[in-house]
Image (cartoon, rainbow, N blue to C red; front, top):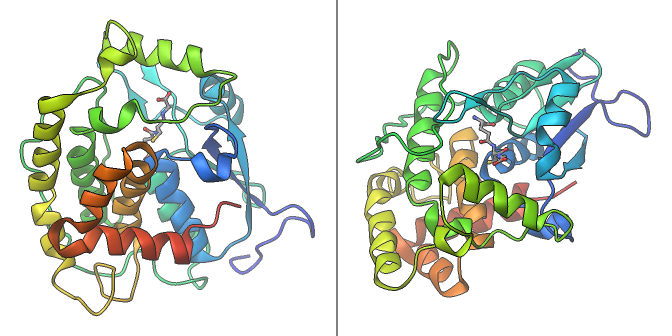
Length: 282
Ligand SMILES: N[C@@H](CCC(=O)N[C@@H](CS)C(=O)NCC(=O)O)C(=O)O
C-alpha cells in the first residue's frame, strides 16, 4: 500500500485543499501553512491534485470533508483553516500542515526523502506573546522537536504579519468579503487601518530582522547548501519556506529584496532553492 500512489490512472489518490488567491492562482497562492504542506508533498514526489477553495468557503468545505477545526479565535470560537489533505485510498482527512507532513512520512516512508531527519532545531522566538488570533495548540507525540520549531517559527513571522497582510492578492470575486472579515476579526477600522506605514513599518522590519537572527544562525551552521542540513531539505526548511513564500508575494519588492540579503542571504538562498526544487503548484 505504501508504494501505491494512484487511486485511478487519471485521478491521484491525494487531493490537496489550498486557499484560492487571485488568478493565476499558481502565481498568487501565498498562505504559509498550505505552502509548508505543498513543499512536503513535492519533496515526497507523490502525485496529488490541488483543489482551490475560496476563503469564505473554507468552513463549508472543511466541514463537508469532516475535518474538525484545528485553531480557535481569541474568543474561543472555531477557526476553520486550510490546508487539508484527503487520501482516497485510506479515507484519511488530514487538516493541519504539520499533521500532513507526519502523514506523508508515515504513509510514504520510502518516497522522496525523510521529512524528519534528526537535527538540532533549537530556535526560540524571542518575545512571543499571545496575539489576536492564537496559533494552533498542539500536543505532538511524534517529532516534538519539529513541532516546537514550527510553533516558534510561526510566532516569529506572525508577530510581524502586519507587514504582509495588506499585500495579499485576493480573488476579486470575494475580495470585499474577505477584507471585511479580516477587519472584523482584528477589530480594525478599515482594511487600510490594518496596514503599517512609514516609521512604524521601518521599526517592524528591524524587529523582524532581529527576531530572525537566531533562526539564521541555525542556517549558518552548514553552508554546503541552502537548507538547515546543507543540501538535504527537511520539513523544518518547509516550515520557514512557507513564510518566505508569503513574504515574497505580499511585501513590496524593495522590502523582500532586503530580506533576501539579511543574515548573509540565508533566507534568500533558502527561498530560491525551495521554489526551484519543490515549488511546483500542481
Ligand atoms: N495549524 C494549522 C494552521 C492553518 C492556518 O492557519 N491556515 C490559514 C492560512 S495560512 C487559513 O486557512 N486561514 C483562513 C482564514 O484566515 O480565513 C496548519 O498548520 O495547517
